[in-house]
Image 1 (cartoon, rainbow, N blue to C red):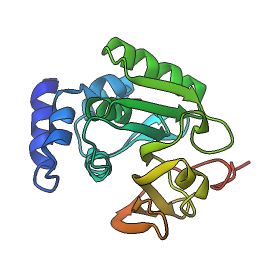
Image 2 (cartoon, rainbow, N blue to C red):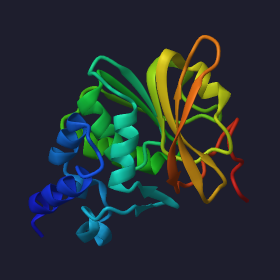
Image 3 (cartoon, rainbow, N blue to C red):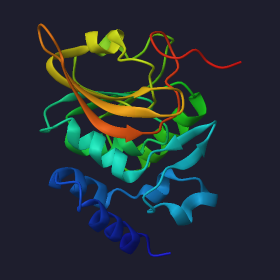
Length: 213
């Protein structure tokens, strides 16, 4: 399969709705096929989510591009990613921000993501095994936070880890369907935008969903 041609076709498709050239440029040279399980690799550049094991997914490229563009990164930020998954989103963030802190509940996924990201030469990504409390308070506050799992509400614990003026993008809704919210933290009342419907796996942890038995 010609992955480079498939990647170029995907970027052309995304550029119809995504106007952020820096996000498109980052996605245009990151080999998404390296983050996909071997039996799904032929679908690496389809605009759709794909399973990566452990009940988790790599998000649809359009949603990834939309979420990343919504963070309005300039290259100087410290970004927190909640839900490392395959590591693909972290790679995109690393191209656009100064430092990426990413947390993952599944240690096997964290190890696999670290292997791929190290192979690609990223030096500005730190991967941690997530704790029950959401986020990673040790390195807060963050200029931007991206959450790659759906929450029942906007988690206050994550808002607290965001700098004033910082942006957070998070899916909020039920376990099965959500709306994508962009939150801009203010000293008084935060600004919240609804970016449209989406579908993510549930966000597990304090101030989010309990793990199902």
